[in-house]
Amino acid sequence: MVKRMKTKNAILVDYDTPSDWDFQKGLEETTGCFWDVMKCVSNQDHGGLRSCIRYFKYFFLPLKVFFNRHRYKTIVAWQQFFGIILAVYLRLFHVNVNKAPAICIMELIYLPKKGVIGKFYRRFVAYGVRSQYVRAIFVFSGSEKEKYANELGIEASKIFVLQLGIDDESTKLKTEVCDEGFYVAAGRSNRDYLFLIDNWPDSKKLYIITESLPASVDEKSIELVTNCYNDDYLRYVAKCHAVIVPLENEAISSGQLVILQAMMLGKPVIASENMSIRDYIAPGKTGLIIKKKKEELLKAISELDNSENYMKYTKYARQKFEQGFSVEIMGQKVGRVINGL
Image (cartoon, rainbow, N blue to C red; front, side, top):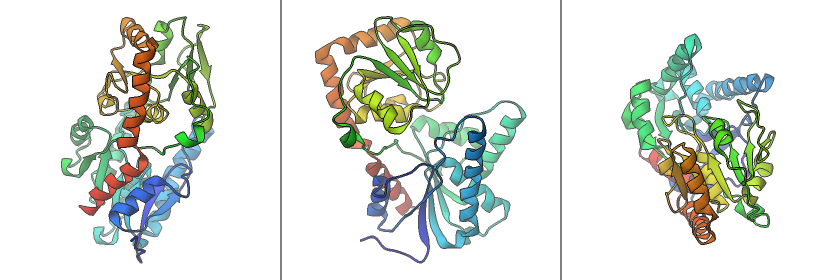
């Protein structure tokens, strides 16, 4: 039975979660406590003035929690910067750790920046995550645990590996799931779309869903789609043959969300090698992991042209998603870590 306490537990999110959010369910089921969901929607604020608005929101919600800190026992920061910035506020004003909420940060992704701004950014993030207010930090893969412990000076004992989970939206899209033969590549962070542009076969249609590309696209087989989010984006995935995830830097964790959205809809994935990809793709079962070479890309596409092979990939992708990548299971895993703090 879920208990309501005088002090609250809260999840800080940056998107419009459903009222019956499965992550919240999993967290409450495991901890036996009620969790408030505090929303400050900023996940679509990118580019120009909208980016400035997003940064403002990153600081505003933690400030609101800071001024009401006595009301909260545990804070789970679904958006990592909500947790990092709250920890900075608490440390900066020397708040007694016994009178501050325990902060759990999900999921830490640290991308170094260049120059003076990069030095300040690193110190800012480290100042927050190394503080005593942060009790748990979740990362996407085991390699990131060691990387961030060394790079940011975080105690390894408070870093936990947690595979990403997402809301299962397959039911509302089930009438649109089909195979129209085209491929989809999507996302902003750490993408190498130039690799696809330079090596994509003319015989296959590819939609690249992103806000901008580093180069123009002249190939008739490749089409850029902008301003495409949420259900509009998922409809492309539902109707595609497969999803392509070309990653630029092998040492930076990225691409997990797109991979899971493909698995959710039973679509195989072709992804380039990356330190965290193998925690999400079962090679030869849910997708293929390639080196960024034209011959490997073409070989992977050929593998999915085989109808018998393709059906095996689609079936296993959906099964794998149901077994371990739902957002409710993710909430249960986070709850077990919190129970042990």
